[in-house]
Length: 202
Image (cartoon, rainbow, N blue to C red; front, side):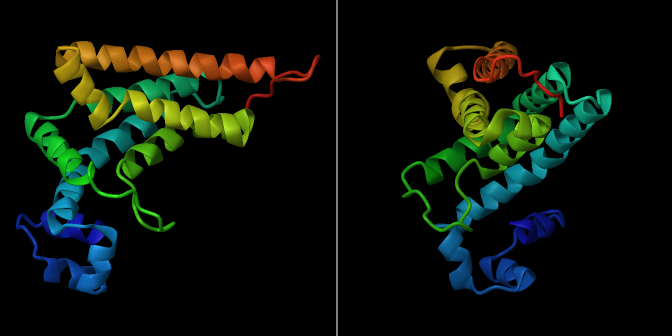
């Protein structure tokens, strides 16, 4: 994926041989991870066009507050959600194409094989990172999965095609849903505390 993004940044569309050579792997290895070369190209293009803006949004959110409290994480998540929504029509078209290419593919079983949406999960985990120890493994996984349902290409398609929302309305809906999940996670964490135990901010 990184090799493909680098080659695309040079302004030309690489061949599978170009990618294999740049990544120092075989063509067969590429097809083990991506059923079609088009899927790899589209995924890499979407990543190249969105990676910097979303990473920057999370970093800026981290710089705003360093205490790891509720406001800090809410700000990080909101910035991430808004960055994911503010895509160009071309990136949205590519995202829809990526869904079409992957929705009928069997779920990958290898630990190193990228699942659809893996980049989104990484961004969510990065934005939530101050809460990881606080929530514990089970509640952490549930919150990450919950946020993955309300942001990303699938959520955008539902907002546009099913609900008929505008881009701005869809963005605000995802922000609202993300905030609700964050606050529900905190309430759940408080309910499970032992009596008299104080929540330690990390």
